[in-house]
Image 1 (cartoon, rainbow, N blue to C red):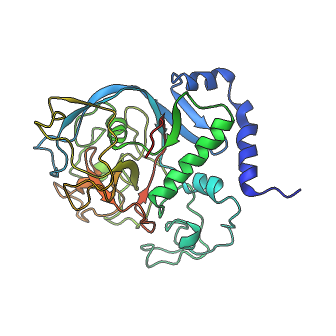
Image 2 (cartoon, rainbow, N blue to C red; image 1 turned 135 degrees about the vertical axis):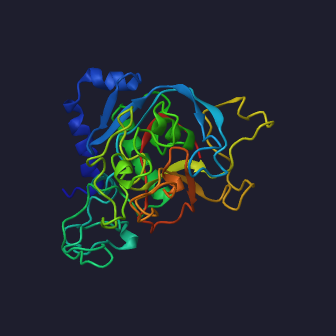
Length: 341
């Protein structure tokens, strides 16, 4: 009997249930387990407690932009979020199990097949654009990129379907992209400054302790998730740098004072504006991406205030959801309350 790749993945997910103690599954379903790994694809997750935080940035923060108005947000229920950005290995195993990646010798697979740009390491010194990546080693522990918002969401839906069949989902929860508020809350992990760890933000060497950034003598491209970097207080890696991360929300301005949802009020579990909303050219037309990528930084070792504004905890950027050729945009998965969008 011929078995297709999707069936093999489903069988593998079910088969590894025994690798997890029943108490661990029960604790995850009760949202009390501090860690959870999605069976079959090794997607590691951390539990994030419910809580209230100040979203956005103060007016005197370095590199601040006008769309970061501070406001109080409550995340009313705990959720799990990926310890790392989704890797190419995890994405391909679930979404493209029959594709012969070993046979594809170039640095990037065909766009139609959804392979990432940073697919193989270059085989000689220099920028990846200039060096040959033909036959170089695969970079499948690097974050998945060149992926549309909908393709990232399809990855989450696939996990949800398999885990729901296996009986391993908390009531009312699903795997999905994080809301922008969940993302910033998880990124900050209780911190209030521009970044989620203490470092010398004026020096590239300081930023690289917790964020992968290209430039200043380093080759262009992503790096393996979490590699040699410092996590935040909740154990999350690469919340700054490496790739931007898709959020569930449409982009739009935050609530303003006097609207009933201003800085003096508390917004509970926000999911962003509706599609087609007004207020800026991107509002309701582009999806939020967070965390900054590996590009766009000063080549000067002394960064001072030149650091990319989108790298910060409060930094926001937006991308059309159907754009699937950006090597700087990936995603991270949340197991949270189900949201219909």
